[in-house]
Amino acid sequence: MEVLVILIDGFFTYLEVLPRNLYLRYGRGRGFRNLKSLDLQHVTLAQEVFENLISSCALLERLTLMNFDGFTHLKINAPNLQFFDVGGIFDDVSFENTFLLTLVSIGLYVNGINDRNVSRGSSSKLLRFFVNLPHIRRLEIQSYFIKYLAIGKIPSRLPKSCVDLNYISIRINFNDLEENSVAFCLLRSCPNLQEIEMLGRPEEQAAVGPLADFWGDDHWKCLFGQLRLVKIAGISGIGSELDCIKFLLSNSPVLEQMTVKPASSEGGWELVKELLRFRRASIQAEVIYLEP
Image 1 (cartoon, rainbow, N blue to C red):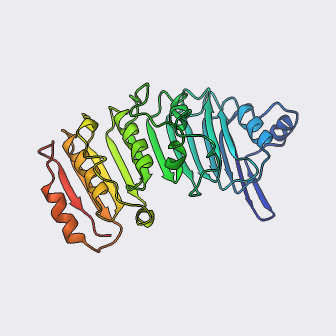
Image 2: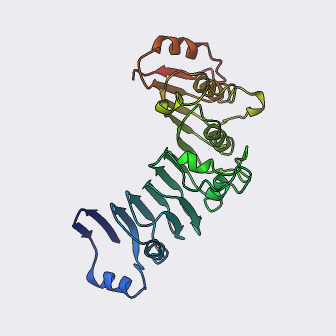
Image 3: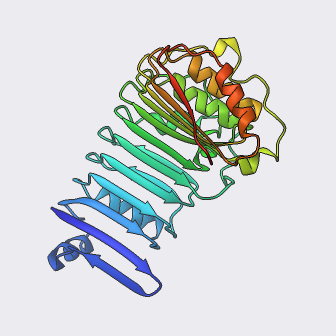
């Protein structure tokens, strides 16, 4: 198997398992025809070069992009891609011909989106993101990427459920209405979830007013028939966080364990008392408080 690893730090470039004839083939525009794994870290590439590189690797199965520069639109056209892990600053991401992709981990490292010309009533980034991901099994929404997914109209449910998705991790500001709307849409559209991880961003929550009764609204009711493990971390005990916890406990009949880890020890005992009061749909559900 041919593997290309490019690590650039300052003026140092390291290529691993890159035969000379393989490099020459790409130089003639034929691409890395047998390449299955590509890891790009601390690289600068022009937009066209990046797109041509990805589309010319017909057998590519694993793609990792970390801390890149020179291209801001992640257009991924890879028919055999199964694993995609990205972390950096970018304006847009789109998938094309990625029907085998099952694991996606994506982090946007900037709190702010340049593509704000998209109005709330226009096309949805959330809908477009999932169009070519019919078999996704594991999704990690890291850093501020949920803000990107909140651009445009946010549906209450995806048009087509993600029936294969069994694990989801979401980094979220529990006091942000749009971010909560995205999170709820995703949870409601994944009927076979077995594990949920929700990570708060408490440093932002003081900047906005409290979000009242979003998760507690009766019309949000849904059933997580296979959910067994929930992890909640980075919370401060505000109402919207507690409402989300209550929502998950009351809609998960086979839940086995929920762990709750606050961002700080302040108000820990009050949080424990609140957790003990919540009704649980599963009689075997164990709620565990973890010290920060």
